[in-house]
Length: 447
Image (cartoon, rainbow, N blue to C red; front, side):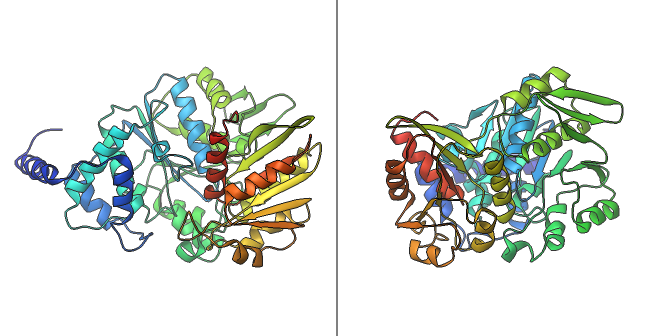
């Protein structure tokens, strides 16, 4: 990028500012950025755009792909990333939230960012923001984009945090967009119905550029926005097709088709996510060999999405299944998978959810399925977490319950009851699954 007097002045100002920034550890930085904005969520692009200009940010990679939607975003990013890396491309992926470590949010060439790399990005953003208050997500997004610009990437895959139109990721004009699904979640911010929420998701579209719509029946608001804007809509079940067969599946579009192995990601919707990833890469300026699609679909992994962990018990094995599903649509996918894969023994559950979720609607698809359910409080890990007694007052139809103060207590108790063939499903929130993963990591169970 050519030097200019304005850029030189900015560099001098940033150097001076950075000299005043106290060196902090990554933990210190995460505590710091958590406190920088009075609201946990504050949608809008004005602040991030102003700081991005001060940072001199332009493009995070030669090709950029943005993923929006209610469910399936993280899985779709994982498929895109795995396929592109199988083709030998240098890929950056930005996702949220994380499960165990913040470093998971920023990946370059398949590796989580190091503490030092993340700290360097936070320092750069802190030096540039001046008096502007940024939310935790805005701060992290700008730091990730700053890192990506310096990493010489062929492709950057950016997951939208909330909505789309006013999300910090939408600062970047992507070459290709994906909208995975539109369902009820975050209604306080995005609207009370699918049509309203669709308007927010559709805000990631750009005129004249391809947008992959992974739902076969997206809201009318999404289709109207694409038409009015002049985006090139690529629709599942219309412009490309995902077809199941006995030991493989087929992806096809007019004049092009190939067979693929089933992915390791297990939920029924994962083929839709994989299909959307393929459609987006096919629509991008990148040219990838067929072998990369096959290898990427086979190699894609993502923690907390119907993740199965064998648990040794007296006389054999039980199973722990972890899933971050936290809205009614995701719970419906869980119910479909459980029905298609019955446990050999008892079906058990550990559930917890945040206060802003529609807990009765989340539980409804799974009602009557569990022999026993452990309810866990989340008040100690999130300002939006519920005490277990409040959670219990919103839960009905899950069978006999045991109330526990937190996930660790609930999981400790549940694991002690397991018999051979039993399955324990842990679901309801990223915080729930993160607590279970951290507990199992401490126990050194195989993940």
